[in-house]
Length: 447
Image 1 (cartoon, helix red, strand yellow):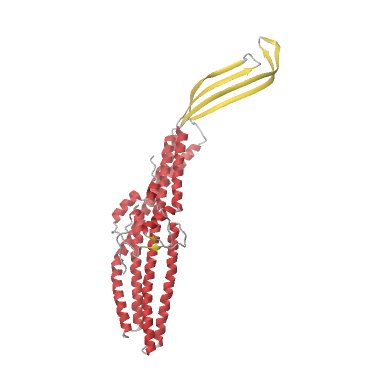
Image 2 (spheres, one colour):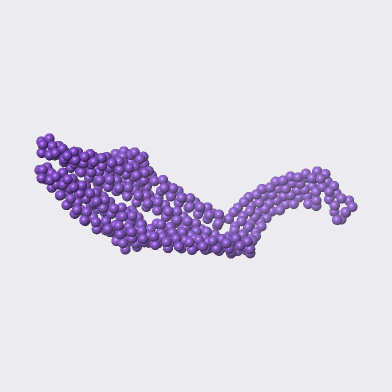
């Protein structure tokens, strides 16, 4: 079986330099760094190497003959009494009779088992499963890093929105203070403006903490120090071309790695059954040896016996009865194969459902996006008008605050909608096995 190495995939993403504090970071660089450092990816690579080693060792064990060299040297000193048929009344007695034996041999054995070919096929499938498991880890890592990266951008955008809100609150506070100092407004309006300003300041500080935690979450996926800071190059979240459910489902049933893993496990269960059934067939063992031996003795008819030559033979064995152990193992393998059939069918149903759920959310957020964009423009214009009216003393502070809150809510909904579209886009690409085709070219501005 031709080995499909995960190193080919990782080679496209490795970096030559580690990330330093305050270095610019884009999505591509984040993915590169994450795949280089992620320990689960490294474990997956080592697992592939281990499976491949098992396959090679099995090939040597199952199909290669064994060859052994033996050497023997022995000495003996014995008191011997010998009685011969020709003269039974006069036994021969030899004290301290010496005997010496020297031999060496080379023995070769080749055993052929019918299940050997099935065993090699099964080990090949297990290697494929390890490779696919490693690719699942890579895809999940890419999806996790992408989502965490865009989550950080979302929180940075929210921080920017809160900064703008705080600036409006500060402008309102300065207007209220000037009106109060000039006697044009009551202290209540000034205090209300101060309370709103303090509340917006508190929200901004809370958002700073959220951004810090978002950075830590991304750093964890990149396997770097959680205190490392970097400059995010992207200020907006990009949205790729509109996805098609038909294309996604077609790609998923061809390239979804977990589906391929379940298919390979189903095949492995079938091969395991065939491997056990093949053990009912006869086993052939061929053997050959070259022997050279010399035996010397002070007692007996032969003073020296020397032999040298080649012996060749073979045996065919057939298991007639083994306590029904093999039958029980075959029955268990049949049950396991049915279980794997059910697992494969279950995952196919689950994959279709996951795709449909993610696509429904994706379509819904795409429909909401145009509404939220329009609503944001309206809320922004209304806020500007309310601020001017408040500055001129035409509008009350409640009218201005209401417009300000509406603007904050509208912009938050807009950027959140964009993020949710991107989040579902990443999930759909992951499910369809196309996670490496994330589009970072098209973007939707929130302002």
